[in-house]
Image (cartoon, rainbow over all chains, first blue to last red; front, side, top):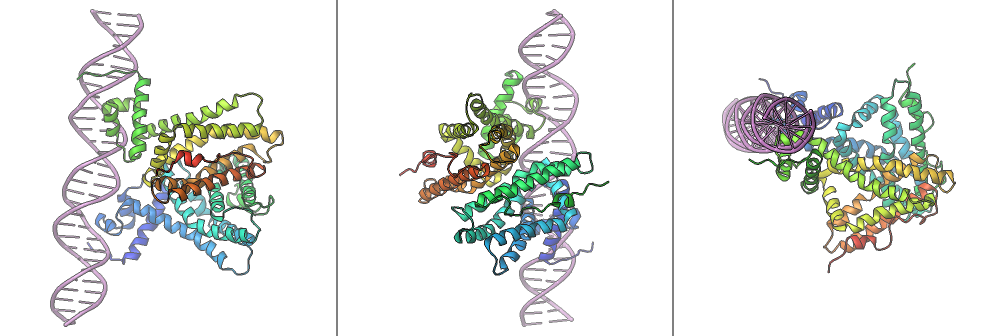
Length: 230
Length: 230
DNA sequence: TTGCAAACCGACCGTCGGTCTGTTTATGCT
DNA sequence: AGCATAAACAGACCGACGGTCGGTTTGCAA
């Protein structure tokens, strides 16, 4: 049989693409190595030539996804002449924009990620993402702390607190996604909007800012992401 | 061979005891059903008579552990004539006391739980615990919201925020535990103390209280839990 | 005593992650 | 061009694991 030879990098990326799809569809545990082999059109030997273990694929996928977040934030970091507050706000806006621009994909990913059997996948991705974003947030907050605009004892700890808040809205997100298209959709969207607004307020309070300073979401963001069809 | 017959409840509890030990020692994935069978002195058929799947054991263990937290908080809820602030503070104190009183066990559990291969176990226990504690915290906060002592728009969301903060100190906890007995122990303990103090301040701010209102940890708590041997 | 349900046994099964021995392709060197 | 070497790949194979199933033993109540 004719083998299709790819460079190590190309093959790795290709396997990672397939893995990401499968993981988000079936979950990590439910995706077998054979699924990955079949999807990527590679044999077992080929697969294990590029990855030492199935676990490593998960790690690589997580790293790749975390790279998206860090890239977005780093672009904001490179803009000169911004205050810490502006930098933080624009970082959050960049992340928000990315979600809005890739709404369908993001939505499917969240829907998959929040299914109970995908706990492993979710927490792995989340952990790697936090590890990647933490130093960037810490740097922004440190600047705000030094110029007196943020009232926090330690920038790194403050960043940890803010990132930890990410899990406070999962219930609301899950409910909004699962109720999409049902009669509860409107109420669920409203609840999610309220939860996200509150998360923004909590970030304000953590940083010692007046309520409403940070714009964590803009009005209509949820309804734009999860439109009610009718 | 002589079979030892136990009632369903007794056998279940016994298997759960063994499972808890094994899970905390080897991790969930690394613990095989055979390990559980051997430890509990029961056959495969016997085991699967009481649990439909290995997963169910994990769920049951998580529920049992969550019951400890809820019990402690419920006792505080039953004390009449307390303000919401006092109730919240005493709940935190009860949880703290329990940890201090079972220091060696708690420490071993945390050390096991924070090992990377035990991610599944950790997050499962954490999730169930949060689900169990959330309504109780929400009730306390609702009372404080209604009497004007807490400045939060929604008690349930506020409780979610506060519980989500639990994960912000894991790094510090892990470092303190792993550096126990080494030269870094003193520094790691200090860092953990600072992180926990900060978590307390964040809770204050979430609730709209002045910094230092809530006593999340008392001075010396960390050093009492993780004594430096020298 | 006997009938029955619940507790329990252990051989068996399919599948999965991972290994190992070899084969095919690209690449650099002479 | 010819050739050696290493990287990319193939696929048979393995041990272990979670789970099933038909059968056996025990407690208990009628």
